[in-house]
Length: 204
Image 1 (cartoon, rainbow, N blue to C red):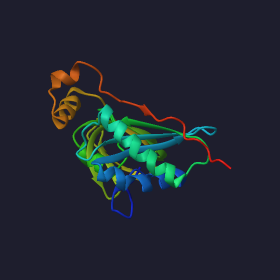
Image 2 (tube, rainbow, N blue to C red):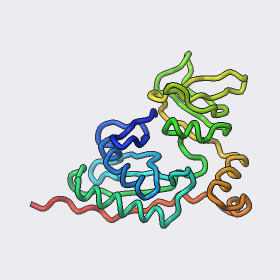
Image 3 (tube, helix red, strand yellow):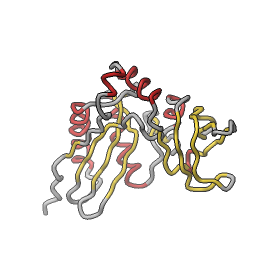
């Protein structure tokens, strides 16, 4: 999941095809609103669902109101661009505390925290890794393993990477969001999906 720069210089998750085109189109608007795209997926065939995971530009979690704002803004763009024929649905959610690491900046931002990663192509005969995030280096996510060695995972070959939920991560996320760790621990971190009504298909 390497960085992928738009013409505006915005770092995006590595995407291809339709997902890349949608991400390129919506990223500048999200940036103008103070948000960043963490992950984008298009799922399903008959009525595809466009899943968007976002956070604030400073890495803090988004709220229900943020989800609604993003949903309205992205929906307006997609209504004009019409990248998907027929009806589709839009789902916007927070990245969550145990968020995915999809960009080089995520590996740098969450250095020092625990994570798990899986590669598409084995590295030294190994696909799955877990340990402490050490940042990004030359297009690779660096993770320190339990034995003290470091593995450099090519971001282009990372199938998925996600932070491990720990007390330290909860406290760091709470501090970033400006809330106390006690408040954060009262319940699960909100991953708030917001669904837009189906987009009507083209009329002849």
